Image 1 (cartoon, one colour):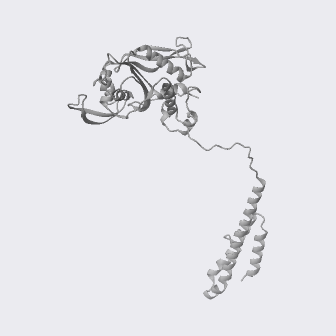
Image 2: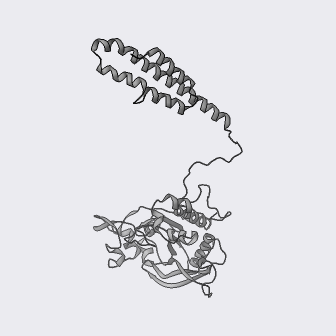
Length: 372
């Protein structure tokens, strides 16, 4: 049998003399590796008789445990020495800027909603809200949209269920359909039914239509405005929208063009076009659309509230008049902040949100610029 005390002294001396983790690993392999000296001794135990194994086995097992413990202790010592050397050599420069933690951003739609609320609050408008699941009476009937109108078809509107509810007279039930609202106009109806004129509100929120492409999505955001008062005329509408667009785009050279149009709930109805100019091949809102380097871009639909809508809300159209307008919030964000595709608004791509999003501290104010 090999001289175990001499082998133990040799291995322990080699372990203690190891000046690095690599040198210590070489000693471990020489002693405890597959071809190591101690491993070779352990392999001989299988060929021994039971009596001999009982006599020679314990010293060999004790040698393995001693070497293993010595290697572990030396390894811990060397690692501590390496850590001490690293700490002694490294310094923290307290003058370097601190890395900011990861933070979220305000979605452009939320930012634009805040901008709209700020602008119209300055004009005396309140913000009104309503349910996103509406009955067809609020969404269509009260807005003078007939049963035969294409907007009421299944391919344009998401219907939820049918039910029976009291009609306008309250004397009999009618078939009512629940649907995802196709515009925020039902909020106008609910407001006129709930409060007496004069009324000045905007109604921002989500709306739903069966449509999807680069500039349309099944769910989108819309803002509508309503004014009900005595003596309201089209001039009030034009001034309100002109003031709004100048504040929103932060330009004084906003020029509007009113085009005759048709909406069931307004009469007369007008489309609002805004002039733009081409700057380095890009369309920039502002300037006269009649210029050679410009044109007109439709941004809003509007008109004087139809007398049938006023009557449906229990008001006398001979006494009360009003105007209404509406536009897509997503489209306003695209025009102001240079986005050319609507679909990424709802993809949840963090790269897009980081690029186009706003800091939580970018609170829109008229004094600082609503898009500051």
